[in-house]
Image (cartoon, rainbow, N blue to C red; front, side, top):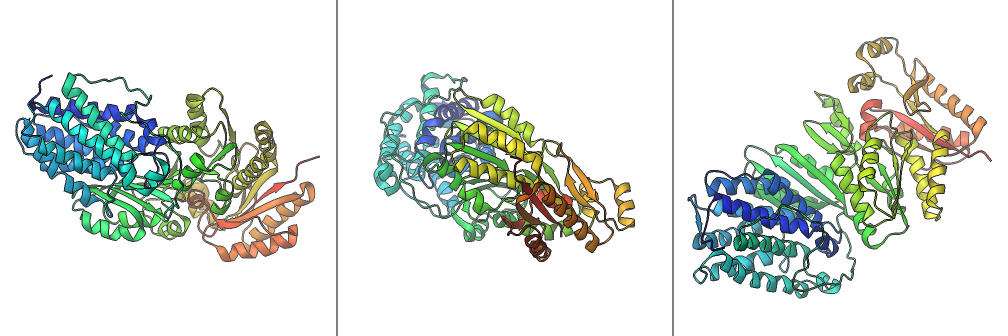
Length: 597
């Protein structure tokens, strides 16, 4: 196809064709992902970025408007280090493009070359021998061939030779790539995009059928993993909207919190990528700069372990309502999916981008009370698909079905992703907080002891009826504000200074186990309940959780040690989602009883 000028339609379909080619090769890109962190998700992130272009970009009346639509879609959908770099490069193309009816070969060459600095400026510490190098060297090749090409197909054919050569060279330019004998996965994704772009220019056709089967480039790689140290745990990303975003100032401020920092976009929309150990601090900065439209924080440590350093044959997944220390999750390589906390017009990730230490002080100032929501079904499907790519057996232990739709979301995801040869069990814990945490702990121990899959499932299903929690609620205003208790009932209860001990019934619903009218009386009745349980069933383990009340938790610890003759398994701050209902100052004791012989 002899194309010497690009109008709006040809420009649009060229980008769509390039996006399709990346999506087709998602799996092969994931397999060779070792830089900057070997978390195996470059293909998935680039695929997400390209899907956004396909779904959101529109053909407009001029090439400038069309390119604006493509750039905005790429920025909105950008995921991962490489995805955001490509999105920023596309944004640079839009900003460098002249407002003309069509794009000629010379103007195209000028544009792609002038867009390169935009990509470099977005990266806090550009590393040569990666995607950024391939972008620059390809743009240089386009510029050098602009006067020697009769049409766009010929221009891309010549410049792709340089792009492939630059891609192959990434292996020798970075030691981590050389050790693993692979090319840079992001750079390879960019070359796939160029190949798809060139296909449309050559044929005038777009393949709308997207295959997940990988299509190799001209050379092959064998992945030999070389695990590097992960200095910052969470791959943290956000999409920020504002009126006058200063990208350079924002980049300087965020640089304090991690590495692999990229700040892409413009003065009204910014896409942020950073590897951080404390994502919640990143989002405390961002919430003051504008409206956070999207956010994520992927656990790269767990991703890396799943792909290259699995301890066990069975994966264990739980949700963030399970109160269990991060040290235990790490010891047993437990996967934790955070639920959503909607606060200040932003949906935060429980325990990840919003932690108890930050949340409870903010809760006192909240004009509109926060709400929780179950994870998005598509997020759960992708999460489960990632785990299943590394494990043949998966046990999922969720918060009580009566309290959240999380269990149902997982059940639906499993029904779609149940592959031949995979064993998956979704267990309703019928509990929450520390009680759910103790069940997760028990399941993790059994998996570590190489207990057969079916035996783990049956044991946890039996133990959930012998595991529970007693919650000391000293102020009902939080239950009223969260909607757990009606305003009329709540006001009546508060008028008589009611301080209930809350537990969970056999179905998983919250229930009042005892009523008291003073803090001292509440504590007395809570421990009387525990004494009765211990006499009848013998408590084998217990844990103490609290909502920013370590002093009271310590007092409960001393009394519990005297009662049970042993220390708690752990003491920790409660999930923000549980805490917003139970209230600041709440302390709870969860317990598990020995099984009947």
